[in-house]
Length: 179
Image (cartoon, rainbow, N blue to C red; front, side, top):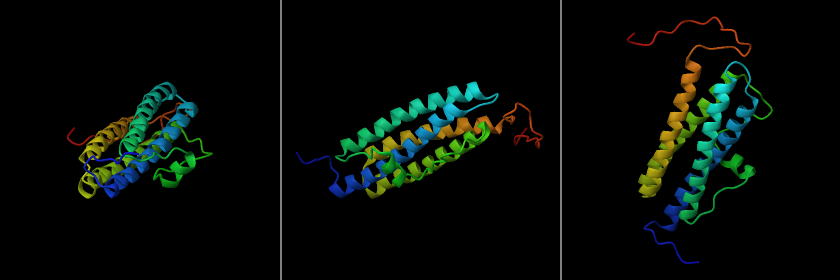
């Protein structure tokens, strides 16, 4: 095989590949969780969440492919098994648990926010430690997509809460600052 000569050392490329594989693993765990919630959600929010999560898992699928292809472009091999994903992912499964619709949304908010924090760190490491501005830029784009997904999900649960049986729980009213 011809040596890769793109201005990065083997150590720099391997460092970035390791970061990308962790991001790939986290994305895959969130993809599986999002699909599972897409299938299991019930209640008055069913249709809106079912459709929203379909949009999200389609976007996640494209991002997963892009992550794996970035790993290959740098001369590495992407993690490609559930065992491998679960070993290096920072996102945890909730196997055997079917939460309420609101809990599903809250779980996904936490997961996407965790991915954003990881990506923010990986952007810095890619650029500063490994001098790979291309990967830093690539990861910045992914981070922005996860920020948008987290915002959409937070917006969903920050509105008027609805219990799974359709009733509105008694809650303290919140007034936005400056209103």
